[in-house]
Length: 88
Image 1 (spheres, rainbow, N blue to C red):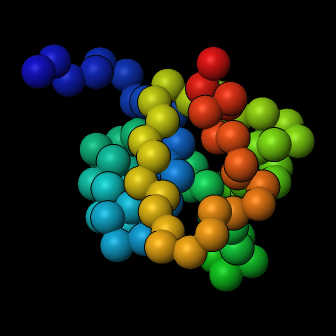
Image 2 (cartoon, rainbow, N blue to C red):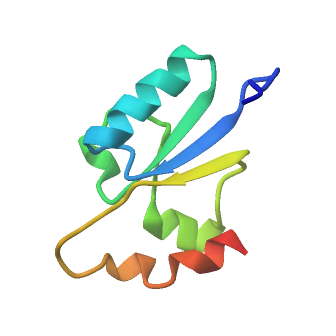
Image 3 (spheres, helix red, strand yellow):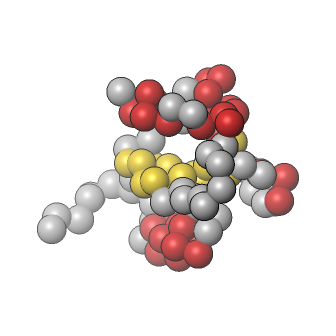
């Protein structure tokens, strides 16, 4: 597998969870720029966190790759009723 020659801008849905935190750390260590989608950005003292509501209003932030790790066992987030529309 080829390694990108330039840093990537990566957006992670579910980036504050167990897997997302590990992936973010590894990507940042490799020199990539990472932004995280979170339902509660106030819980994170980090300007790289964006909310689902902001994405619905403004669209996806510029990114080269999107990783979706978000999972819930409860009702879906009301602001993410049709997340697939942001990928088209």
